[in-house]
Image (cartoon, rainbow over all chains, first blue to last red; front, side, top):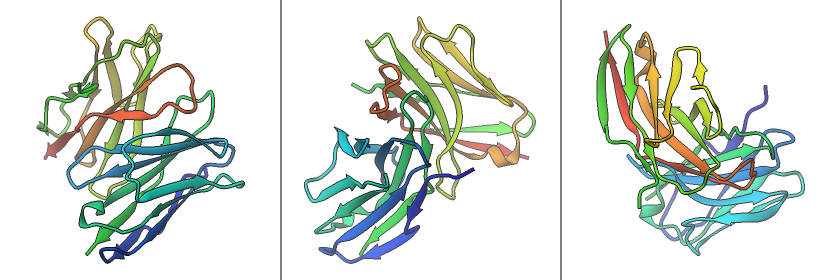
Length: 112
Length: 117
């Protein structure tokens, strides 16, 4: 069965650079969620999209932006990267009446 | 206020024994869902089990069962016959609201389980 695909799996960036993380949800899933998990921390909700519209917003810095495209894939854009942005970034997808959330394998971002 | 509380930062269990991981939650919404995820050292987030607030019976999935005590607002995960591959971080999570595609998951701080041979 198709899963949630995230790319890249690993990313190393320098401070003040920009990064773009991509997420391809399970086909026919209409909602995408982004989470940030710092070292030794629980996942923190960043933002979600339902049918390509932003549906909820969590503790996402102003330096970050995200969108969902017509093919339902989503991108998280991160600018002016800081050392504290180093984390595992998860994307998850779900479908309207389904209680399940399927997570991707995550993108591990390291800012040096 | 913390919505999901996992009071056990770490636990040990002997192989083939059962183990219970605690989770309490706080919500005023009558409709909610409770989830458990496993996160091995490789980092992926693996869904284990789900319990809806209106479900009459405790959820079970193979060796995993959820001890749902609604009045106490607890949703403990029970792993029977532990295996070495069960060693991982376990997160309890909650979704508030009913059937909403836009309802995010809120996670607890996790419990690190180590299964000993």
